[in-house]
Image (cartoon, rainbow, N blue to C red; front, top):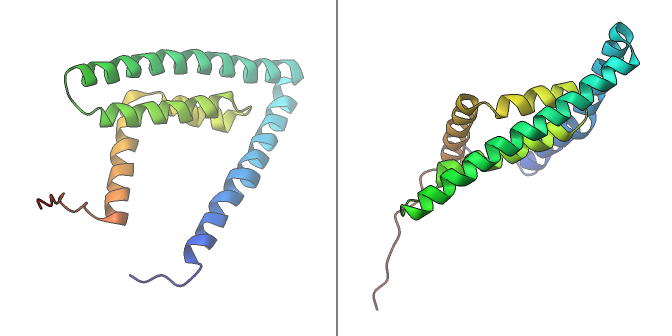
Length: 142
């Protein structure tokens, strides 16, 4: 399928608007609503506690994946799945350190191994559909 010129730039602009305007605005509205219901101090404690617990869980998961990567390398295997898990755990850590409950929920979800495995498979499938199968390697013997 041929895309019109500028199609990808418009699509990326939509993602950037969501990332830098819509999500922080939604986080702010949610924190204000929780602050109205629970009060300022409980809301601040909630944000800080989720950040601390998230950082701790991210560290535990990250160390576990790092050990799995080392085991794969020592056994002569390419640690592709574990490297992808490591990247997803790093994204989870960034989401958990960002103040807000929506990003915290997304970050905590990424720390659940079955959710990470499903997302990894989904991303691989999407990349495969987008770029197609890689051609077999060619070896030029001359």
